[in-house]
Image (cartoon, rainbow, N blue to C red; front, top):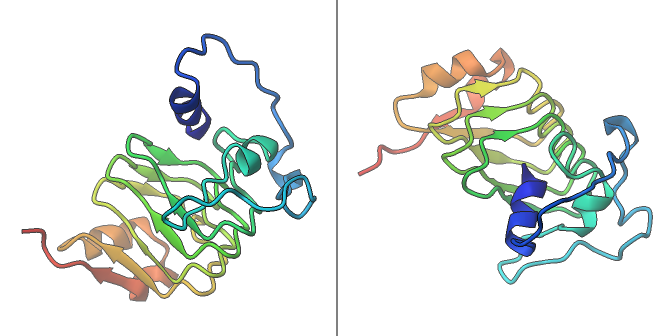
Length: 173
């Protein structure tokens, strides 16, 4: 999904794309660590675009798209994305900020596993499915913000170990 979105923006006239499958999830490496690039590109707002550098060279296109990109500190998922695939951001140990749009309805297995710098996350009301291991090994995760009056709903979606971390946001006016 991210690859299609990125290509739609950067090459709107592209008719055919051939893309190598890339490494399987367990063999993906951050291109910075492999010295293929010096750093992920950084936007003016301080977020990492990591595209196409990290994304294309580490198996961009869904599962594990940004896995092990240890320099990634902030991600803003584009509006229109419907799900965060398995291991999409796993091992991104510097990831501190994630913005999830209302279009996202599901978060897959290990999507944020091992994101040890992630202290909080805000889940939009559109999320109806969260895999049990989506936030596995997120040792710093202390707060999961959910929409007002939805704490019980998200307790059904999240494993019991996260129930005490759920905080309801104030109602929208």
